[in-house]
Length: 358
Ligand code: FES
Ligand SMILES: [Fe+2]
Image (cartoon, rainbow, N blue to C red; front, top):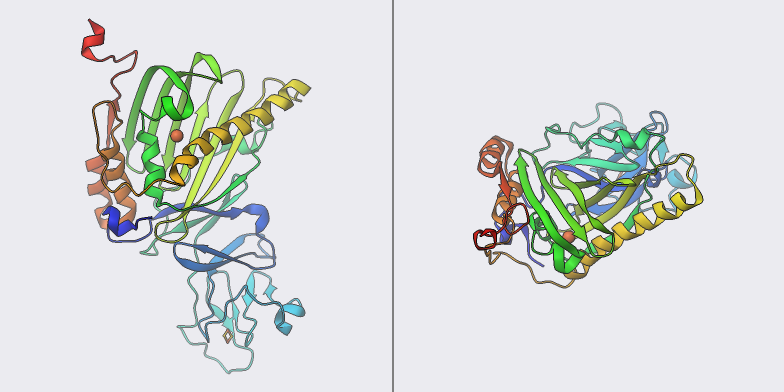
C-alpha cells in the first residue's frame, strides 16, 4: 500500500469529484456511520425532503459520534432525526442538513457560528448515493454522466455488487483504463482490432474493438470512460446492449472501496425466460471480468513508476490526467491541457507494427 504523496499526485491526499458512498436504499431515517476519505461520516435520509444527507460524524459541542448510539433517550424516543434535521444523542443539539446547528435545547440564543458540521453535496444517481468530495469545499464543477437508461423501461436496472475494500490506492485501478496489454492475459481479448484512448478535461475514455475468448467470436466494441476520478462506465453494444458501472471511493489514503453493477437492454420486453437467464449471466460475467483485475490488485505491490515499453497504453497520460483531482482548482486547466489528447494503440489489426504491415 502506498499513499497519494508517494505516488506524487498533488497537494491533496484525496481527490475532488463525485463518489459513491452507499446504495440509495441504505439511506433511511436511522443515521448510519461510514468511513471514506480518511474521515468518519454519517448518512441518513431527511424525512421532510426525502433527500439523503451526508456529513462529518462528530458533534462540534463535545465530539460525540452522531450515528453511534442506541441508548440515549434522544434515540430511544425517536428524536434522533426530525424532519431533515439530526439531533446529537449526548446533549440534544440539533443540526440541519447544511450542518448548521439550529437548536440548543437548554441554552439561550444566539447559537455560536462555529456550531457547524461539514456537510457534503449529495445526489441520488442510478440507485446510489453520491457525494461531492472537495478539499477546497467548493461547489461541483462537473456532473456524473447522465443515466437515461435508469428510467427507461426497456432497460433492466442493475443489482449492485459490493466488492469490499481493496488494499491499494485508486491509482492502481485508474491505470487499468489505459492498460492495453493486460486485456489478452487477464480478460481473454483476442485479435485486437483497435485500441484508442481519449482524454478530454475530466473525462478519460478507452475504445476497444476485439474478439473475446469466451464471450464471442465476433469483434465486440466497448466504449469505456471515467467521468471524474470515481465513476467508470462501459457500454457494450450487441444482441444485448449493456451498460456497466465500476465505482470506487478512497477509504484511507491508500485503500479503495469498490462497487460493480450492470444494466442490460434485452431484445424483448417483457423478457422471455431465455432473456432473463441471459441478463443474469451478463451481470455475472461482467463481475467475473472485473474480479480478474481484482485478483491482481489485491496482491500487487504499489507501482510508483511504471516500466513503460512499446505496446503498453499511454499510462503516463492517465496518471497526468488523475493529478487534476488532487490539486487546487486554480491549476485544473493546466493539468487538463497537459493530459488532453488522443492516442491510437499500435500493435492492433487496424494499426499493426510497421514490420507486420509489410
Ligand atoms: S456533544 Fe453533541 S450536543 Fe453535546
Ligand atoms: Fe481490466
